[in-house]
Image (tube, rainbow, N blue to C red; front, top):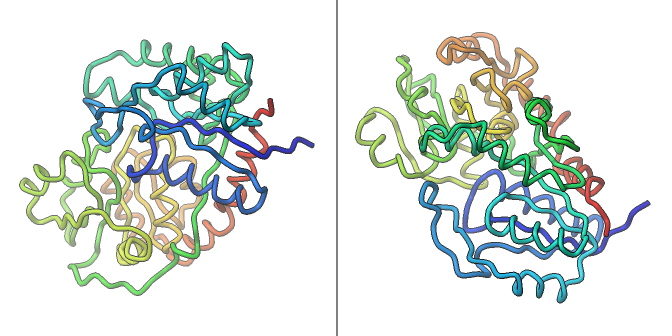
Length: 337
């Protein structure tokens, strides 16, 4: 049985960013510190000179050096290395590991090729070729769902393994439905940006109200265009759980996410989910009583209102998505030096 005491985690995504990648990494490493005694050193952009990514300013791009990466290894003496992102820090740690013969694992969190195709017209074939080369030396490439695993394998990726996600049910559980908006209330939670396909949700004609929770580069312009929609900004913890609980249907319009942590958070609060039939939603929404997926988002919303049951949503999450299970899978997947 392998036993590891020190993990070096290389990530270009870290606090103060608030997204599914950061929450997953922080939650899992905290659980492993508690349950396994695993000490984790995070290598993130705040430790280097950095600048905002031109197409995604919340992400800071680090100006790394070989000497600074070497110091992390020499000072910390890790048993194992996980590279969570394919940015400058991920590339620098990968390069060091390959030179030193140090095994490492990687994870695939974001479908950047689809994002780059949408905003910069970069062919996905080129982007995936670059990513395939990045992940090729990895002992294991961890992905959040079976459909992403299949997709990457079809594109020639090797050693792909599923690493599922979880929900903190001590925070995300059915709360008092506090909102007094006209019902039914349709809700979106997440980054307010182009790649989230938010317009597909906002353009739906519906008798009721729409609420957008989150922030991002499009918030100001969308708030001006869709004056009937409540844009309430970022919510966290108990307040976020109360918003999820107040919605009648949670709408997830993205077609480019690899999973969608917000989906299982909404379900944990008893709110059914309407989404497109794409990776992420189709891996989660496997029971007609907890949500609907399909090509027509409005029809999926109507089916949620007519046939889904809030208690089934809560039960489904408790049975299928725990952070403890996610942390154990991650730990078992690490490659010991």
